[in-house]
Length: 84
Image (cartoon, rainbow, N blue to C red):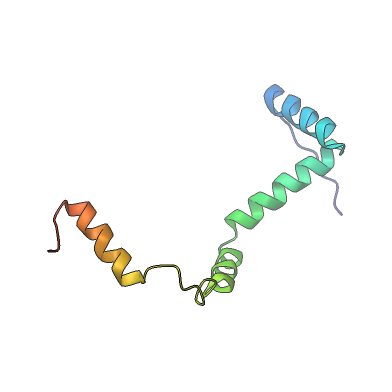
């Protein structure tokens, strides 16, 4: 682990302190968690891996309409037209 010094605004400092107290964690743990979540959200390769892992997640579900049916319905609603 590397030590890093950062500057927080008064608002940020108060919020981190409050969150840490509420969760029973240190301010450092709260900040590391926030940084990890930011990295996960912003890292394109990681996002692509997550999307790939979700592929086919609901493929065995029988209670969902087919994608082409949904697309036609969305298109109909978007244009205000009726397919019939």
